[in-house]
Image 1: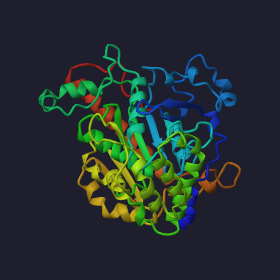
Image 2 (image 1 turned 45 degrees about the vertical axis):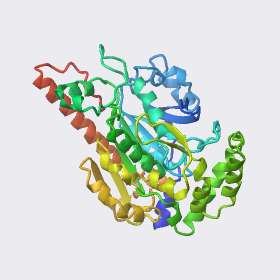
Image 3 (image 1 turned 30 degrees about the vertical axis):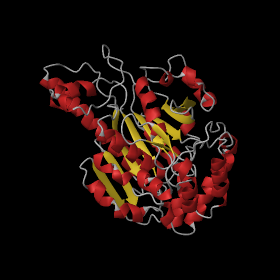
Image 4 (image 1 turned 180 degrees about the vertical axis):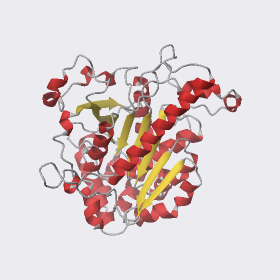
Length: 436
């Protein structure tokens, strides 16, 4: 049961109906730090106001897979009017995996825009290669930070609001000012908020990013919250048991081979020797220890500058562990973990106290689900057979749980805004957050 539940997360669901409901767009975003290319797979509900009025929705079924980003307003500044759900996949995965597509479908069914972010070098369609000699890892938050900054620029803002991208200030002087300043900042956006969803390794990155930014008061005010599924909290590849340590290592080796062309651009002899040694490493722990001196990283304080290299695997694992940052998260964060998750539950359980100390973190522990499984039994279909979905199921329980969590946050956000408007003696003219 555990293996079956875990295996189900990787299998794609029936997408035949999805093409009738969403506009699929692929965008390649360039990172300012080192020129890395990050692939974003967008799914936009066809009834959303973010789709261009020049597009004929009757032709969307034929053009959904190959539509041009230039014909959709989500690419333009000050244009997105809906909440954005930004998803980060797990290790050796990409945005084509079933659990990502299933959550994206759940989000678009509720009228939100879903964006599957492929970590550098991880393109499931094999269309975009890594352009730098640096791959992704468990602790580098620079790419997520770069994507969030660009998405924030595209959110529609209220007329008359300064277009300068805003941050939540950590200045003591600012905190001593009237609370109305922060309330006005929260009212700046018609579009958004942005919610960050991470799975496994992606969950660690999301948690670490939220903690880094919250600790220093630099979290973009467009971030409404997040969710982390199957987050180990404490990263230590050396403790992963057989055979998973070998299987995970094999996946990383596959990624190294697929991105060999970009890796060869690094001419330092030590780097090339380390990559060859990594390919010979029997486990993910040995591989991490070998590659650690050449992994990309970032400072955990502003301006979060990009650096290269750790002393060894132990330093990499410690610096990357999100349990060190989860206590600082300043926005609502949902964490879901299964007791029978053979990959991460042990580490999660040992560091759970760091989550419980933060009132902004909600922890849900399920009895079963494996690693990112949580599959539900299929409902009867209209033809009398079993319904579609992952492994013939209706999808993942976690999808609904996360969507309900976000729905509640949006509702609270709207109610808070209405209360502020009443306190100011104004009437809402209909520019509230759109949760439809």
